[in-house]
Length: 379
Image (cartoon, rainbow, N blue to C red; front, top):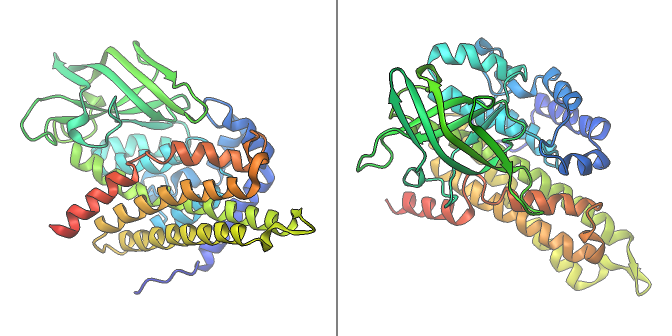
């Protein structure tokens, strides 16, 4: 079956359901309030998402989920990106669930994933440290085993949705070896475990990024996801499968910004005519279209390859590099068209300023993914 970029009937229904949800339960006024909170979500909103089954969209039915394709998840998050809806929906239902599916034992999947699908367990990935690099050699947090339990020591930075999470997927080094991808172990840590602390990082653009400290935190051997020392490869596989869904969120955000900018360019009158008639404004809008389309098509090609078991590693890096840059640049162009009013925190464009910046580096910045793509192409 070839790549078809049209939505299927079921995808159209899912997309409409998500857009209706935003209009009804998370309009712009609600998004503005949510963005100022540490969690980005309310209990009522969370339960509504649970009731619609979206937290289990990629979780197989045997683990209590819906068992949909990654493309369907992309359609859902493309719609949510138009909000842009904050909250731990991606961190838990997509990224966290993907890592559990790839890294955990069968017993752990049976125990954890139904709780994730029902929203009772909320996951956040605690991987990056001071360098904010997504490579195994950047992991310095230690985990020492003694008498059937592990002691974790270290600090994680830029942990998305750590405050909203009930459990942290913590990546630590259990052995120092020459091959830095070895000796890494993945743990599932209850955030209420003694000596686990979470602090929001300062700054307007931090947008649900947190510091997580583990100070001699003791966890049982059962907290290890999969095998001791063999955590990096399944962790990376889970991250890679999640990336295009995040890209879809950014593609949806780009489309929403484009639509808002077009409406403004048609209705804002200056010098007795709509500003959309001015060449410079048209140039900015054309740039938005270029970035927006590149983000969407590279994302859906990647999702299609993953769903159809095609080689997708190059497409994953390409989609992430393009979509992160696209969201950043489309936001910039919208700011230029709207001008001064877009700097107000109450203005719709400002919602995307925070999201486009905080998500730019999340799961790897464009430079990182371009480098990885080049290595694959030249190999």
